Image 1 (cartoon, rainbow, N blue to C red):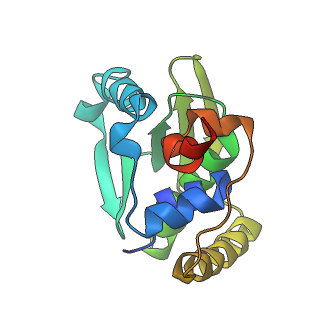
Image 2 (cartoon, one colour):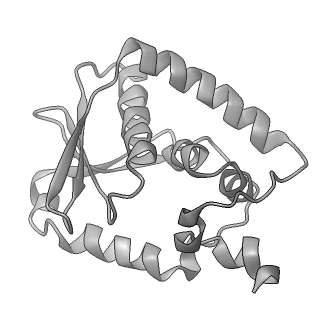
Length: 168
């Protein structure tokens, strides 16, 4: 499985979730929250698909890319995981830059909250992403799944039942 922006986002959310996802255990299809996020993505900016296109690069899919202004638009359901969202968009910018497209920026849009966050990629971010890629490759190649973490956000994760089923 090629490394994608999903791996980058999961790395910042939960190492256990990342390991499970990278090893073929996916739970997103069973999550109402994931389905809700997909609905918001598909219905929040109905005319956007006429102007911008979805781009796939090295296995990562960018929701909408405005090629004229070099802006990535990423739509999110919740503002609760902004750190992971930011790194996901920075990874998209990183991939485009590695493909020779310079000067790209990003916007994370939270239509439910009527919020928008601008994202830029710095040279330090690129160094961090390259280090993160190495860490992800090492972590996902490990035969052992990382232990559960106990965080409030676990209750909203699509892997919640998988990780915590014996607790309830």
